[in-house]
Amino acid sequence: MSKELLRVEGLKVHFPIRTGGILIGQYTPLKAVDGVSFTLNEGETLGIVGESGCGKSTLGRAVLQLIKPTDGKVVFMGSELTGVGAEVIRQKRADMQIVFQDPLASLNPRMTVGDIIGEPLTVFFPKMKAEERKAKVRALMAKVGLLPQMINRYPHEFSGGQCQRIGIARAMILNPKLVICDEPVSALDVSIQAQIVNLLMDLQKEFGLSLLFISHDLSVVRHVSHRVMVLYLGKVMEIAERDAIYEAPLHPYTQALISAVPVPDPDIEKNKQRIVLGGDLPSPMKPPSGCVFRTRCPKASDICAKEVPVLEEKMPGHRVACHHWGIPDAAAVPTVAHH
Image (cartoon, rainbow, N blue to C red; front, side, top):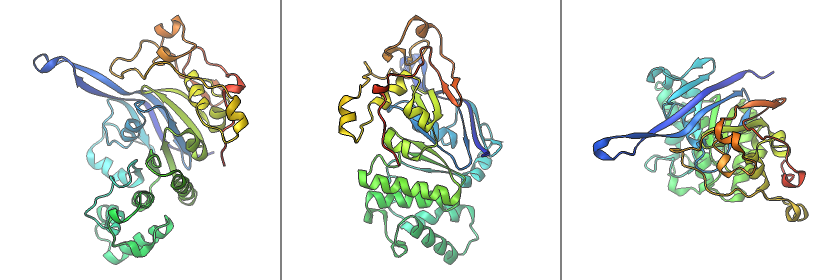
């Protein structure tokens, strides 16, 4: 049985937003992440999905302590990260890395590729000789699909896919235990997306990585993830094994997301039922009472406005936060192709 690497308990990230004008000075909390709990095992990939504005990226940054949580606990490799000093967090940075959404914007345009990838070595191993550092950088460049002779080039000389490979190499140079992938392929062409996703999976197998893979593309998430967690307005709606989520989602929100995934078979695509959600995502400053999804839920009833549903295990390994959970009509949940 795999060993637990990361445990998140009741994590909250609330941003105080001024709402009362300059003189009055009233603040309303924007609840970007509101009580999220999950675990991640060694060598596992947890896919995190949900619409834009659901708190996925904020959650990832809060796990890394790039954003200080308002409440809750983050326990990494047996050590609690919340509330500790900056020096303790800095030491943990070697084992916790992130790959950003915009590959070019995340690279310093004034630094060569060799300096960008090797910078973590300079920070954590300042006594390492320059030639040894360059050798490590060249070896890793080859591993992520970059020609080692490109070491003295600058980011603007590379394509988007190559820049993301540089970002991945920078994240991997210290051989971390956890890498958070924050929409790592959304800015890339579809053909390049597959290459980057396969690269991440190969690196995971080789180095025993654990991944938090944040995305709104459910087809990509199915390809890479062992388990999937569905977020809505900063709260967990459902979390389960990958196949359970995709083949028998229990939450109405998950069912709607899965129904929107295109299917490569034209007959299935033509006949499947699409679950269309009404309205827009509510403001995280004024979330609905009770269940935050109730204003768009086709199954909502009076109890949904009065009681917050508890995230509970409804089936083995399958937790759902819903008063009206259930297996949907088979026609509404298409078979999504995966490899």
